[in-house]
Image (cartoon, one colour):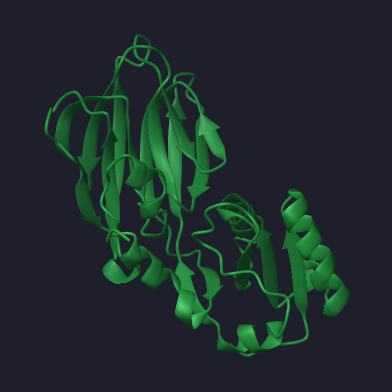
Length: 256
């Protein structure tokens, strides 16, 4: 990765992230994020998602350093020889999911998700959801707490907590995972080609209300949700060669 002089440093609100921001800004030349060729993000995975969303349509490479907790999308923190690290960094390209949610009042709301799009029951009653893949009904009625569609990068987040399958980055797959499925009792989800369109139709939306969430976009009282991968948008993350995302996804599948 060829490094220009146009670096920008951004950080989360935590004292740890802010302290790292001050150290790096005092040591290296920097410009505002809008003028940068590379953005260095300091924080946790949540802040990385914020940074990706904020610069979604620029496709400026983002190099994260962990000043949070899990830091799955981040590199280790270091404040020395940053230019050498950036020159060695390997790019990984990601594509978001695009959600179109239809509400009871007829409103249509779109959102983009880097990790997953999830449908969640709003009340004590289980949701009833019809699942269609490329407009063909695959599940007439899924009775559940919810269901999600994840990207490979998001497969180690909510999807993993819901016992979904971890997806390697190069697999060109999306994960479809139920949340506490009651019927079909033993359905554990599906792996889908990244080219498919996925439709969810909420049955009994008045009696069993459902919300849809795409990262920071939440839509309540939905009747139908359409999800597809949007390859017109590309995000580039930079990783140290010894700490790349592909290796982390692989490591998550084996006990340490």
